[in-house]
Image (cartoon, rainbow, N blue to C red; front, side):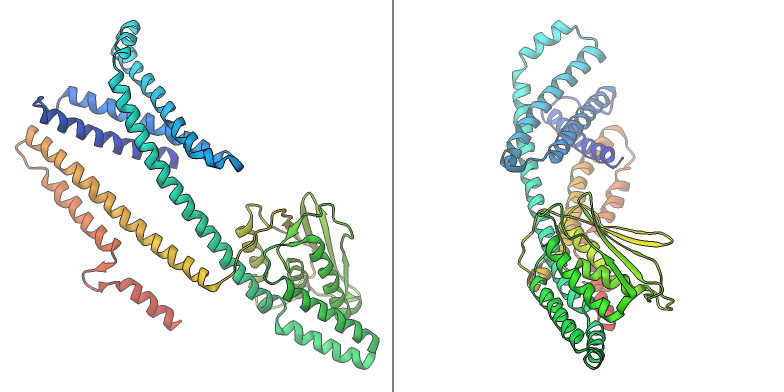
Length: 442
């Protein structure tokens, strides 16, 4: 539905502009211009041509966007321009044939005879199509380059947040405090176990330090780390935790986001009761290019509701790296998280400055879009109002032109004030100052 609305909007705008140019051309050549059936017919035909040509080009470019170009991406612009010209010229010919042969009843042979002599018309259409297509592709590829920059900055921002959360939320001081308490008790009760616990704890923190700057790690590495982490949990909770995980991975190239398994294991222990009589049973399974982490539900009776930061962290990091989703399923007796296994590693440079630049760019882009909308509105006003004034002058003594002149004009003034951030009562940038004031209070 949105596509149809966009096509109609663009087509009607182009058709109206062409109609105005046509009227002004006729007027400048001394051809009588009036608000009559002939002008309405011309207006209708131009709208028909504009909407149909807009539609075929719109769907053609949408199709090109759906094609996986891969290493042939450098040919995308050439295919787009040439294809647009061919489709436009063919559609233009068919539309002319439909109007003159079907609607106006001109004999087909006569139509073809006239069209063979009408080369200047198609040459002009070719030049216009080539110009519009070139401009469109320039704008299109500029926007695509900006989108890629934004996506890259989002990945950087997400990685920065993930690294911070990995140390702050997943292996936080609370976990370290509990681990040291367990270590203290083991030193007195079982020195050999205490030594094993210390070795496992050092491996856990060494893995965190090694992987914290990476976006993806191999499943094999993550599983080895998970085994070490499970040993810590089993020493801490003794026989209250049972964990099953694969020894061999089917896809050696498979990768996951780092510390995802540790976070899910910690999440299972955090939110469930674990005891020797009712052990917490955790399973890690590789199924159809996914890694499934599931546990039986034995929820703790807590007053405070979980914030869900850990799971949200994993979901958001995957969203920045791939279109494949993390699925979270919960039934009466089981909780399951399905992690997609990825095969492509993304390398980025993580800097806080890039994150800030992305935020500034986003704000600047929003402001630019508002200003562009204002200029489009102003341009339409400049084009349409003279045309309406001309029609008013030719057809009526009543000056009805004043209504759109002042009504639309007032709307443009308000649009401009909003786009450039000026409030005539509160002053320039009033809204931004108030937002900063509220943020400072928070």
